[in-house]
Image (cartoon, rainbow, N blue to C red; front, side, top):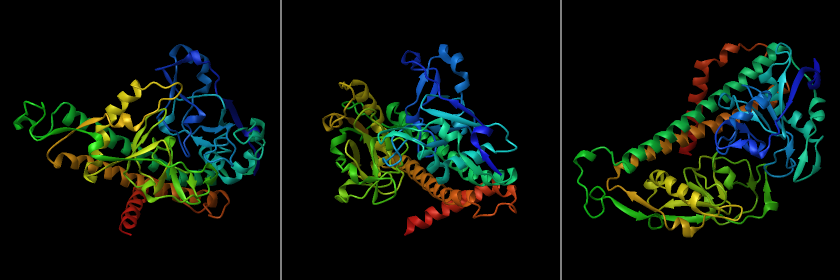
Length: 429
């Protein structure tokens, strides 16, 4: 049955509040700048002050709400924003939607399934339709809500919609669980570093003698970061060679560090010293000095991103935790006219503590390896879902005979085990 969104969906514009209504704490706000490729980046959220909340309750987002960016760069521009679609995950429930985006909710869930509509909005047929109705220049395009409302589609029956949504959301549920697992591993690494190195409550600390001169356990030493690592700065690539069609190698820019993934590429070929491998430690050198290990595929390092490469690779994960506090201190102390700039001269001032026993590095390495493996699983799950999406939406795969119970918890675990097996297989090649 052919249905028009205008007749069967509620459209709620993002709230337009003043700069004075923002606060350092309060209710978290979802801006277009927080849209990730498939979900939300929680690294740099703004907050609305508590006193202003009653005026904007209609902008509060719920699970499975569909949010479309209506303003941003043209789709022809790398990492374009206009038309980008996200569906609100459990972790995004309660966010307040800011301006330059619109929220879609189905009026009758027995006619159009909310989750199915979310996947439809991510499909090429919908994206092409709304982007063709965009107005403005390449660097700032606006998609009128009237253009989104006019979209018509031949929807399958509600049971077929629910089956398609169940298949695709099984992948997304696993991806979100894996992201939570990565977050817990990161928290464990940070808490362990705090306990072992900052508080000196490492295993065996009770019987370890303290050196009177250094104030550190015997054999431990304080060293300058520059003496145990190599700083590799990024390359100044030609912007005209950037693309989002997969030509060439992926690129890592500052904005890619928090999510440790990139959907941007360059066809330019440069020296291999600019290659970023899985696990590499990256630091953003402008604005927010983001710190993260790289989990995505092989990529090129772009200027104003630094790859910190320990001379002893076994120290990589430990160094990651060691520089978090010094970088945060530098972030707060460096003044810039508009944007803070981190330079090598600043990195050269960082000192860290190195334990004498290699066993203290091993736990951090194990945690990093676990994060990389989970991220690899997510890459495979993302790829599988993206292959299925157009096939399910166009009817290439017949879902009428499928049993929804095939995508319940035990089968999700089988999907995860299959992804793990594929990761192990690929790692051997």
